[in-house]
Image (cartoon, rainbow, N blue to C red; front, top):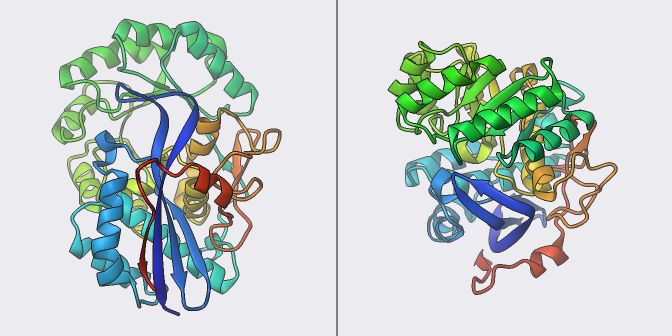
Amino acid sequence: MKITKIECIPITFPYKKLHVYSGVSKMASEIVIVKMHTDEDIIGIAETGSTVLVYQGETPESIMAVINSLFGPKILIGEDPFNIEKIVAKMDLAAKYNNQAKEVIDFALHDIIGKKLGVPLYKYLGGLCVEKMPLGWVVGGSSPEETAATAVKAVEAGYHHSIKLKVAYGTVEEDLANLEAIRKAVGDDIRLSIDVNGGWNYYQALENLKKMEKYNLVWAEQPVPWWDVNGLARLRRKVNTPIFADESAGELKHVLELIEKDAVDGLFIKVAKAGGILKSRKWVDIAKAAGLPVICGCMTGSQIEAAAQAHFLFANEWMSHIEQENIGSLYRHQVFDTVTTPLKDDLAIAGTGPRYQGGYMYPPEGIGLGVELNEELVSKLQTPGKSPTVIGE
């Protein structure tokens, strides 16, 4: 089998409510859809998830440029998609970082492999480790009343494993008020954590986390900027709250550095951040060797991104030891499950991709990624002024 053609389609995918990340508010995000064609008429489908410049340093334009000018013509066209280790190694040699571009290629390759073998991807990756995956819910820092109400709805919908609050968008007093409201609303048995997205400097993190200790936080995610690994290590030794890294843990080398400096109690991975499923499996193996729990977040994409991450999660036994956060498609559509509210306006056809029910995620059962592209919606959502591209025959 040979790769013959690659299509890239830029789309603008709306959120159901205002989405805030690192102080930037959006009602939609830009995503790239990839279709990878083969000479056996098997087509691999993939998506980048949302492109967030402040997080990944990539844009739809940069992703499409590196695929069209480098990965496609020099590495992919004419190659056997089963040679995925070789392909990923070549991409890493050809381009520093660009991990979201590498991720979407990796997803498409894995979709082709699963479709060729006629099995759900998790079977190829190692088999099903658990039948269902526990999930935590993430809430934004709005008013204490609204934040607490959302947390209660999440717990009632089955997300009793944990609630995570996004902080550092406003004042620490506002964050403390939100934490107090959530804790009072859901009780002491629900695991409560925060995500700072690197929004504090070292001293702010030290001061603020000490103030928050009374809420019994199970972890603080990325309390200092991504580059301050030494700050993470110092902070971990001075507060009682476990410290997890997200933005600081991108490449495999970054994970090793965090371990060598004894800087964290756990890690957050996004498959986009690591550069695809193949590299994510190695990423987690390094964390497992150090005994560090790993939680998988997402790039708030559609059920296509969620499906690719779900196969990775269900085939990796280490990931079943803690709740996961592969809930981007639910968060985007503002629903808690896909059973009572099928995602009819998603990039994947309703009913394909992972099933979410009662606070758990269930594996996709179709072959490959187990998703079908919603061609009509993709055509409708193409980003104005930005044309799809095709390389190959």
